[in-house]
Image (tube, rainbow, N blue to C red; front, side):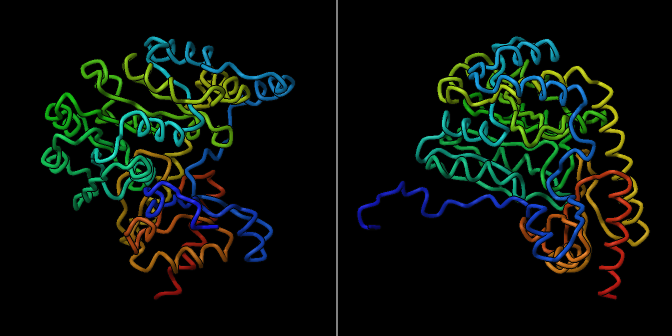
Length: 369
């Protein structure tokens, strides 16, 4: 049968994104009854109570198709940010939106510049469309090498991706750093700013809000999501902010009903709960602060973070740490996935979860003494 099937050549070498292990799988594999998952950068407080009520109410009408352009949510977001709804497109999570960007912009042979390590879907989405990935390593401080980005731009460059704050490292690119990049990118290149962790990052005065860049540079796309601070990861709802010209083209390929009606209503409700957002960010930095203190007491290096996770060097193979933590009911992400063998990435949690994690990590580190 294989000789009759002709798939696109890009699929032959296409990388596959590997998500963290599901809780149920780990419980079954290790015979555990309780799991603490600090692997996927989820909100430990869950959704806003207002979002939960919206979900319950909207569930009664899921027999009806959703608004295909999510107009109410676009209007709500436009008011929230002081922009126009024509600057917005809603997607089935940030994942779909990244693929839409590549589908709209990348043709075979086009180039896209990105950092490594960074979010894997940039590479995957560009490669799927036949584009060439130009991947530049982070510098010794785990920062984007923006001078290297500028030097790598050619006539074939269509997109420059900047994950700010970066995933998996958690650090921001400062105002001065981003300004250097923006000032030197040719006008024909689209700048994609992945701001999935925006609500955490704006606590840092040095963070550069992408909306300020968009006002000066229309050839910019900003990606944000309700998966992180809003706690709606399971509903899959994200959005792009860009110029009306770019949004119009992406709207053409987004799919008819790409955002479900429950997700739309939950997202609208979450924007009304400023207290929930504040409590989430406050808890996040309390949890990460305790982890940082633990690392400092043991002279373990970590990257300064403005996200809801931290990237830290354990001084031993992350595969060992990952397996031993799972035996103790803790799921994290091992750094070898990004080519950083001794690092692990840990999401923030409740203070109870944070204490449980640090107790388990202490045991694991002592095994290697």
